[in-house]
Image (cartoon, rainbow, N blue to C red; front, side):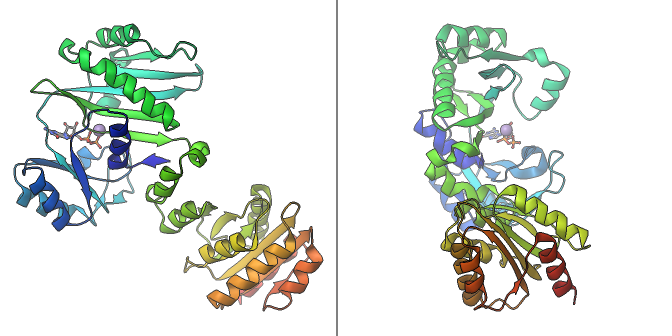
Length: 383
Ligand code: GDP
Ligand code: MN
């Protein structure tokens, strides 16, 4: 899960990494208030999860709050397109932060090097918006330091890396503790990437994280309910965002048949059977093992948030999951949502009989096999 820059900076502040003061705004008025509070000299930054934001026009410095708010108001709602992200992303929020006077831009990052099986610190004196080109044309300008998991990160190693990277010696005294702090933030938040670019040396000799990118390991989100709650902001599709918030695996596809199954394998099989009929699935939704009625209901709700859905196919194989629980959830959801489109259900396995009698009370089409279910929903949707 990627954090927005302002979220990443909030995380860094907790670990005492110096970051410029600032707040997030969702409209011009809010941007103006923040800019005034910061004394007018600010930088306005689009909060979008894409690379090349500065070059795409999403970052601009200002001398007064009025101009900053005009720019912010114009930026919010706009789609930013960059080389790294040609389809672009719509700006919903901007970060308004204290404008710093930058003398030098360094690069620093921490990532998990899977091949080396080590966390790796990277530093370069050639930070800024062209770091990708630096990495391609002069990789030696980026110095790597693998962290020994037994001994941890030592001051002398950091200093040696800063020297090797030819980072301005004026910055070393501040960068050593900063890199320790970054590494603590990285480890404590279960990040797989933490990147500060630029790590700025200001004209008055301070080192601050002027931009921050953090990716948290999705498999560790259960340890970080606060980030998991933010998670919806990191999705690009609003239904996906809602699914993330509900902890449900949902993938948007481009067809018209909603699909709910338990287990990724069963869902994929269902998609294949739908494809054989010539129709296409609208999504991939896995309720997971052991699903209870309320979770199933939550899945059905998600499916019908998508107006493209012309029919629903539910395919459950009860193992740990009890068929009757699934059936209860389905029936409740269909009643509450007053679903008008055809729904085909196939339930096998644990408590399948009970499930069928519950489903018989609702206006559904039962099916025995996956193939039969796919054919039924295809013809109901087609007609
Ligand atoms: P990115 O393009 O998404 O990486 O956005 P950044 O936050 O890194 O900003 C892009 C560039 O804008 C930086 O490399 C800086 O040169 C410049 N910039 C960002 N914040 C400030 C600031 O507070 N003051 C000044 N003078 N320049 C800034
Ligand atoms: Mn940057």
